[in-house]
View (cartoon, helix red, strand yellow):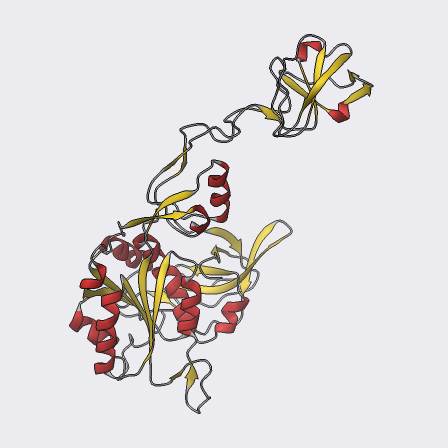
Length: 418
């Protein structure tokens, strides 16, 4: 049995469920230009204002014809290019030279590829008979007028921006970014750029989280490194909750003599839970830091708190598995479950029953078979090992060590942890 297992540890799935049940998504919205829509959450459904394509057009360079005329020579009567349509009709025995994207002229019902045609001056002969409607893109076959394009709660991607641009949409109604206060605690910490001191360590957690949070629709205010002093920590928390919808801290949530975060959280707000059956990352605190005041008149008045463990790998894993779902939900995004795939472990993996283990792994496909191996040292303090990984090997709480050849669950790293 895992030596860190204690009675009352909350299963990971239950922890996520309790966070989602507690917090309330933001409702405040704003209008932004399309080009500023990347990584924002839609606050309303997007309905197609036009057909895409707007009219029947050619999928190939070739000739627009009436399919019934394929048997003999046809007379070329004009051209249809993208943006420059042929104005007349195609009648019996006639054809129009057409380029990709050119509108299908009236009377034509088929496009024959130029590779399947022999041309003699202004006449053509078709060498391979097309079927009726071949090589024609129909109006609205991509997106139909008044159809649902993207749903409220959708996190916009670069491809979405291109899609919306194809509809002529130039601005979007999105949820406002949620505000996050970020801090780290500990007398042992130095900021990057400080002169190194024996017995001290550089703070990697705050820069890591600051970078990862850029992937989400949030505004981050950095409250820096807070010393192990309860009065100072209390003042920082009071300032942070006036600004933020969510405060994220690292360190100070275990049971050490200088770990004051949990104590002050209990004083200022309330703790929902603070120990999880998860490895790495057992000491994770979630709760309500209290109600904020004047600065957030148009926003939710509650300020939530996530206290992450201090070891850098534990910080990264708990952030990804617990904080990211919370932030995405707070930001108004629709629920998105991680994609779990099966893979074979070619080498044994050590584990003790008791906690769900998120080991860092390297996934590959070998001879058509999904395979995953350990990324190296699994210590919660070895961030370099996580940097080499491309996935989690998620081992169930009750599972023992994995023998070579056994199947395991794999969650590939996504953009929120890369």
